[in-house]
Image 1 (tube, rainbow, N blue to C red):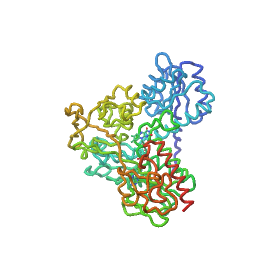
Image 2: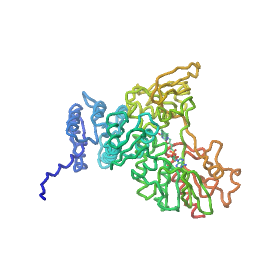
Image 3: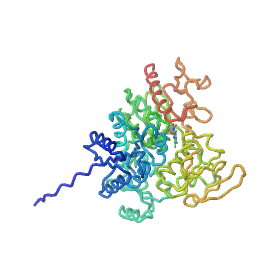
Image 4: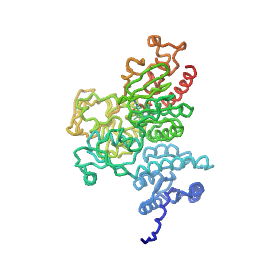
Length: 563
Ligand SMILES: Cc1cc2nc3c(=O)[nH]c(=O)nc-3n(C[C@H](O)[C@H](O)[C@H](O)COP(=O)(O)OP(=O)(O)OC[C@H]3O[C@@H](n4cnc5c(N)ncnc54)[C@H](O)[C@@H]3O)c2cc1C
């Protein structure tokens, strides 16, 4: 046999950090500071005008290379930094965007957060760069590396555009950060993939994994296991079981594991909870430019993994049993896991829209909370959002700015947004021209055969009804706890939220056997604690959920020391 020398393939080009400033001295200084820190792994490209920088972007794109971060001066003649970033987004939509501003221009930079979905603004001068420039760029490069992986799809999902199962799988993959490409079954590529997979398309969706395995309409647990997500606990007994993988549960898992407790977190779906559905959380401490729920969840997951908290997903907890010192939780498949202490962090779920025909169209044009996987389908469309609180406002901004919907109409029962929405969000919405707020309006009927086609709206002042065309309706009308499975075990208030500490009063403590009253986040059962939105009278905020997760762990220690 003969061997042939093969030219080694060239090393992949380094991704680019591109900086543009019309002042040559500043431009050189930024490039110099960046090169010193990042020159080895990243290519630093600098330009002295928006037009030159755009030209550089296009050349880089044509060569098949990538731009990771764009840093643009705000005040440039001819083309401002914001204008440049806006146009550069078309060429490199995943590049992270930074605006360089003088202190006096801070207001403009804040406004730009909406216009170009700015990731950060940097005040000039940025000396010393170790403190003011590098931490920002480090964070952006890390975030870009993650999204970039997402931009190179591996698995392929073929399904019907309006099928509820396809919607659920797309949401599952997107929220789990599993790279995938979506193909409608009626498209040429979709048909080709189905043929290659030996499927006639009668049962959809079909997932073709990175390794080429074919999964036909997989259950979430099967899908999770195939993409490397743990679905079975490693042990039978733990120090601490945390139920729920939202901010409260993740907070509890991080603190529990980092403080030496053998901890497992169980979640019925994917990590993130409600926060995982948020396109940008603006009021969480430490993120002045906001952070997407997906990113926050990803960081929390890494942190929990670092401390060796075990995370078991797609497992629905349906029972809690107390037997001596053991607290045993059971799953819907009959299996169970026990611990010395439990933290309930099961949050809340969306309330269903009480409109005729709505149930049948859920995930077929009517979506609860989920905008992540649906956003690409909304480009150029007229979409509708029901609700007037912060979650609805954030979704409207996301659909109008990021997803590229033609118009987003907010259907609000109240006379205006002030009743339930934060001031900053009302202001933000007022600056976005393709968001229309329609007050005193309720949805009375949703119409469609295979998928949503029309809405019947009622003017609450006049009682007049109107039928309009609509393909996408996103519902954000508040949420309620789903705690029926705790019936007869844990005391709850009249709406199903779990009572703790002083709120239990004597009426709920007839079975309480300890010589001390329940701790602040402790339920009517010793050793079972609550954190986050599912707690009666909780604040319904990410920060308070995380804080309660940490506090509940502190009380678990106290309980275990005394038990
Ligand atoms: C779109 C949107 C935007 C928001 N924006 C903001 C914001 O900008 N700022 C802010 O402070 N707050 C915001 N909130 C509110 C914030 O997200 C919540 O207060 C926070 O997520 C509550 O955290 P949690 O962990 O208590 O509950 P959740 O986030 O609800 O998480 C609960 C988790 O428990 C799981 N679970 C439930 N039952 C079971 C069971 N039986 N077995 C296993 N697992 C179970 C659920 O699947 C879920 O993952 C927003 C909410 C939404 C929906």
